[in-house]
Length: 217
Image (cartoon, rainbow, N blue to C red):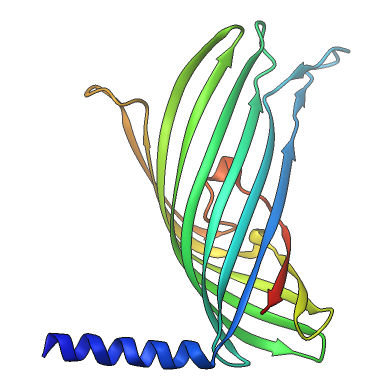
């Protein structure tokens, strides 16, 4: 009975995918933050840590109908935090992740369409600190996410389109676990977040907007 059920599921999935339109694409996001602090009427200011982030999100999927699509996206990112200390101190963050997603068409015209993307994914990240000539391993993070994100698409042709993903408007829940190191005495911190602007990347590596392309095969 179990084998029959698995065969039926496989047959249904195969039939649906055979009728579906395959698409590939991806998006890219950049983020930068720099802060300086001036106390009182002093003419001098103190630089606070500055952050630079690059995020890449390749994806592939099936367009099941004019109003629905499913797929899988990957996440790769790097972030650099400059603490402006002497000796020079920088934190390098490396991020990876994957998330299956579903898209539903909310509104569309001949060229423009507004979609809602629902995704459930996992991400992991590691931090390396460079202080002068010394390099040490920093905390490691693992995050589980459930995210709803609007996607605005513009079709250049029937096959090629431009996409804008405003992460700042996303709504989601994330559960982040941070472990300071791999020793038995490591400190583990669990952080849960829910609200607007929450996305697949940890807060320090999030980008407000990502721009990308999508191509239908």
